Length: 447
Image 1 (cartoon, helix red, strand yellow):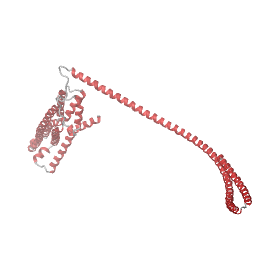
Image 2 (cartoon, helix red, strand yellow):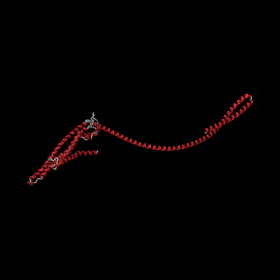
Image 3 (cartoon, rainbow, N blue to C red):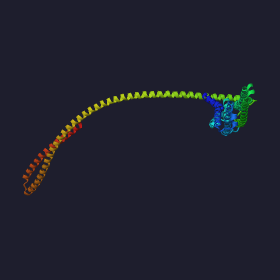
Image 4 (spheres, helix red, strand yellow):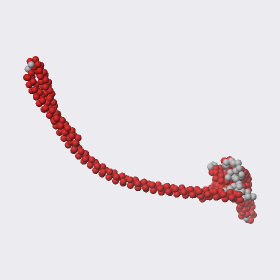
């Protein structure tokens, strides 16, 4: 804020003094350069502008005054054509509350910079700031009049350089007159008047010429500046009137006014109520911020605690899992060793049983071979029995034919005896085979 005020002060001083002086002296240098180069070699110009150092100073002050008036003229014209850029939203029916001045100020802030720097833009901004600070539109008319008077005072103060130049230029002319008369009277001499009257008159006329020429130039330049200033003042007056009219159109009647001269307490009560509401809003917002801060801090603390607890749980679980896995690995190793030992024992028993079973199988196989031999013998004996039966039948047939019955009976008895002996041997072998099978079955079940 202080920096902006300092910059505005420098810009105001530069626009009021710096630029006019700079431009005036630049034109003054160019003007006398043209005179001494011969471009402006008329004898009257040389006589009235380059005849004496006082005339140089008068010309310099004249050009500074002209530059100041020209700059003010250009600023006035630019401000006049920039008034159309300054617009506020239309006034709603019934007016609008004073709290809407913030939005109007924002609308002004969105305007181009040259529009904001015009007298109308500054007037509207100052009036809206007054309404915003006061909280109501009471006294807005008086504030607009005060701002108009303030702009008029600033306008008069802005013409200080021109007024100084207009006042100082004739003073310089009078100073030149005094200097010329002094030169004329100082050059008079009684002896010179007697002896050389012509030369004395020339010196007197030269001094009086300087006196009258400087005064003439000063008065002429002062008149030019006065008429030029009158012309510029007329433009500035028209601009000020236009600004006053536009400010009244934009602001008068825009805001709702509750108070009046007969009942001024309504506005006071309204402002008190609005102040209380605003204080309540600020208190609620402050409390909300405090709660939000507390909640944020609680959330952060809870997050830190949760993170710490999570890390501790993770470490404890990792340690517990590591110990459990180690114990489980040891137990699994022990169980695996026990199971391996038991499997080895079972495999040993199984191998022993298989060995015994193989031995029993070999014995059974041998027995089966014996049984096969026995069966083969039985089959052979059966074949022999068939043959004997056949032979017996033949013998019986023969006996029946020959009636030799006793021999036949004896042969039959011998045959029967032979068959009984054969069948006894076969039945003993079959019982032995059956006993061997039952024994091997019982051993297999035991295994």
